[in-house]
Length: 123
Image 1 (cartoon, one colour):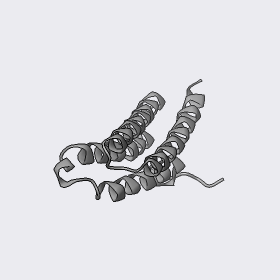
Image 2 (spheres, rainbow, N blue to C red; image 1 turned 45 degrees about the vertical axis):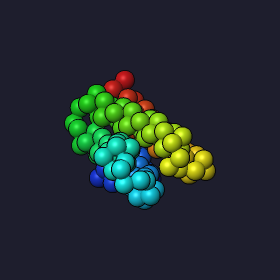
Image 3 (tube, rainbow, N blue to C red; image 1 turned 135 degrees about the vertical axis):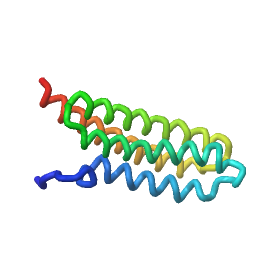
């Protein structure tokens, strides 16, 4: 087991970052009129996942850490919702949406692990 010194060492952050890069890649194809709409919203939600993980990692108090991890998980759900919208309006193929949804579920599972790990230190 490796020592975790930085937020970038967390698997949840690594997978979240991969998801973020894929969201940016796929949203480049969205129509230009969506740059301030769906494109911006889904990108901000994806960035919020890793940002909240990073901020939570750096918090000293366990309850604060957990709150930021919960926010990251909420942002992951927001990404999933926006992917459904993008699919339903024809910006994504079913397979693309399903693949990104699966990646997002993986990130949420890892975030749940972070919450459990921190929560075990409180109890």
